[in-house]
Image 1 (tube, rainbow, N blue to C red):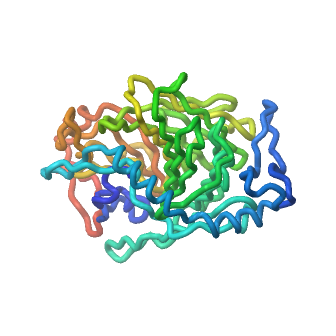
Image 2: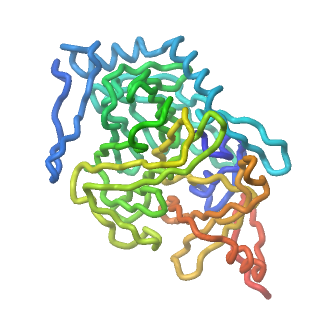
Length: 402
């Protein structure tokens, strides 16, 4: 699902650019070389659909890219958008129904020049402008597999890179409808949908009925990830200095009735940091292996339902905030906390003007975010003892009481 606030323009993308500014709206074989892990598991570098039998991976990708656009896929995606919707609203506005699968941001797919057998998602970078700055380049590059059983790859401009594949997915060939990737019936008869953007990729899985085990098991390649951190159901993929370059946001499910249910993340087969301390400028916990398993679990959900894990850049805020608080945390080498404020979402069970019960930390030195949930009401009370003033360009700084 498009994170609340992106289409409305109250996004924290500006933090990663201007301090704390706010902004508006191969060889004929199906499986090539494998990377063996310490645990003896293998991660397939390339998986091709049956339609590419006997075709080299690079040529297969070129052929599949040419025939990927599908009117049938566009029709099916439109149907899914109408089925899975939630209620959202800006503060003071009437709630409106928003589809869980956001609009397309991909212009086209083309054969990857780096990884044979993969398709590069060509995504235009929005020209967000405030105070003379613009985003310039996309922080990540997304590559789709030509078959659902292959690996989706997210590559950060820092060099940190992750590839993930859903276990038990079928070798169903990719179809593209309106810029969104669809693998029809690829997971136990349900669709897999991947929506790429300039911030990463959302990996939707459709369940038409309750599965025997309410979980998704992803095999992830972390051979290009110096460190891992899993806190509050958010997996951060760190560079050698502890900056979160990529992350997996806390997953959630959307039912046909519009209910949104949070899911849980767990990691097995590799080492990771679980400390609530900020990740920057302290030793990272190396995975210790090239591949491990990420599990998404949930319960108390009515079906049909749509599961949405998102793999995104750490240089973009994970949450949308409006009328929030942003200030420098003392004793943290300049870390900035963005907390409270209004979450741009509305459901029958919550009000639009409810203060958001989470926070994000931003490190101006690396221009990256780290998410950490905590109860913010003490912060809201404490900020009454402070004064804040807004500076030019949307920057905020703490001002002591005179």
